[in-house]
Image 1: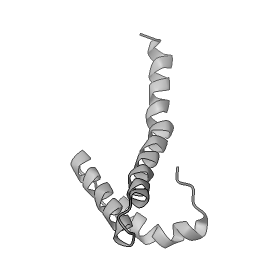
Image 2: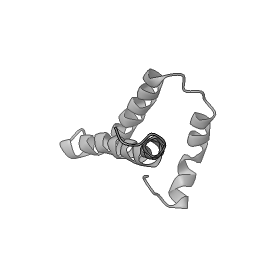
Image 3: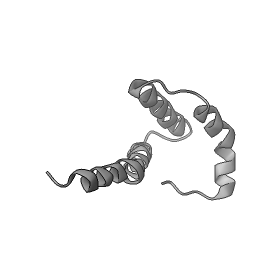
Image 4: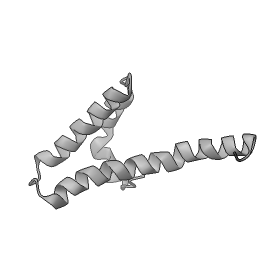
Length: 85
């Protein structure tokens, strides 16, 4: 998880709550939101390789952390319940 301190989290609290209170209907909507956040990140930065890389890998690392915390645990549970193939 992108672990940031409480002061930094506070900056995004209103936006985060607005997103959390909105039903994201499908994968396409989720992808749209992530894409818009990436574009917003780049709005104040020069479109150099390093900053474009930060936008892409910030989302990839977030996805990897979500997978580690949620999908992998579910896989481990299924493996425990069903055994290896």
